[in-house]
Length: 552
Image (cartoon, rainbow, N blue to C red; front, side, top):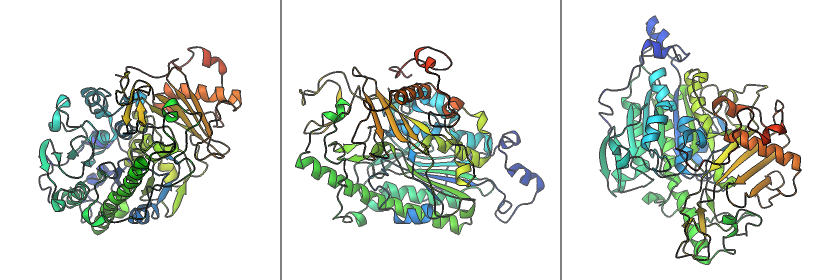
């Protein structure tokens, strides 16, 4: 398969004014006339960047185990982040955070529907022009390439259909709506192309690999490039490539301490799960776990092909490669069969591996990072002045380069708005109104009031999570993950009230933050100053609200 005419006008070439917005000197190289054989002075062009994004790949339950090549080619050749989080454990809000560098309360994507601002007209008008790829293309002269799943409602007729190509992309090869492996439609620079069920030409992970390699063959050699490759794996329906469908036959979902146990002293949605789980649920989740791993083997192949092609073309040493996921996943934890959407580590913690210029091999960072940091990091790599953005995240470049005595955050925000209608499910009349994502045995994974916000804290002395639910109970969950990494014991009623008050205050501050105020010192940072008076007034920037019911 060949891309050939990737974009009618070819990659954009930034004007001199735009190129000056990014520090490194492509413009100066062009002015000097000193160009290498490939059209660029060797080793002097701004770095290229590749972002590999999987769908629903956990970190806590061994999600990286099948990816031996990826760990060797990216992790072992660079840095692995052991404390990487998403600000929302759901595809569309999390992907919007990657693209914008913002928390959900600032980009206003709250779920996977058009009504929840997922690829809506409002998103397209307000947020898409300010995504980091749009800045890379317009201000830094990067050629930008996208392939795979974008946002869950991309291609919806009420939001411009497949003809809509978001600002910022030179080459656009995007999946219509949610993850599939066969029988899907792609938008190729705004024109629809349907695929069927022939493995050799239609299996989506392989199609993404092929079209990415084609881009590397046909791109301009005069400009740096950014590639975002967004695979369907390991999202349902978990369709593995034929050669991998018999692998991992003796693998089962991990039976860790919170597997198939009742969620005591937790939010009512967790308490409603049946313990022990039915044999049907256990067989189903074990099978799903196995199939998820099988789909990842094709992702591993994709990574290997990409790295080899970058090496062959001489681009590898000048290219940063990021590998991460949009959210985690659970399989049987607290007797919830399969899904995400919950506040616990298995749903909000993700893999993050990075290799590239100036990154030493075999590094592990314990720094607390989030996917809102990816956009600022990539713009920083391109030399763009981050003060010109309204992004909430921080650049990871100082960490990647091993900067000593680095001041870093101690907390990140996690927020989620539950889905469901305020009516009783007729198939599960004993459950409270508003449940959704229900299994045949009436265990439900979500509800309209499964709406929460958390502060995830990590510092030299503390490893905590503080969460509040926006429901009639105003339920609070607090976990000491040093003593209780499986988050079995909710210590909200036994923790020091003063500390509880500080975390509550910090949560309110983060829920109302925007841009630089999202990066102010947290409760456990040395520079933090706690003023309890702000908890009971409207002083400063604190807005006394819990969650936005009308985010748009």
